[in-house]
Image 1: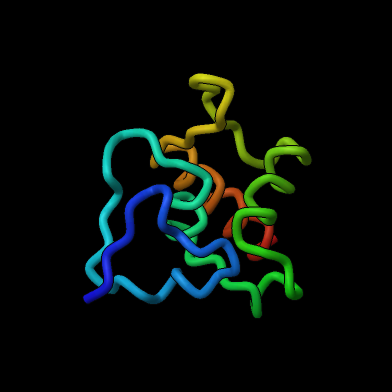
Image 2: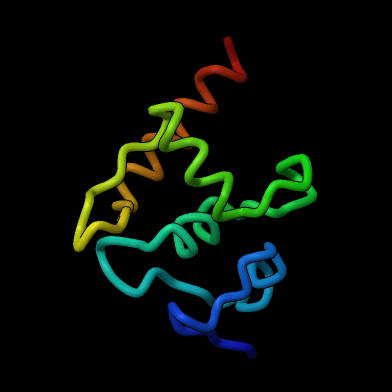
Length: 92
């Protein structure tokens, strides 16, 4: 099984299925970990990079990050809220 550290992640979406046993490293996730948690894939995002998609959702106020050291971090609770909001929109 391939494991990645925060600085090792390829940002082209190829890392998303590389670690089937992946678990969040802690209570706050990086944008790369958030993309993995949401299972973003460049093919599903119209060719957009998975991390770019996370940043786009933040710009649209659909995801609410915490700012730590000038960088966005995401709680699992916030990512679950986003999933629920998308489920609600799809079923409406």
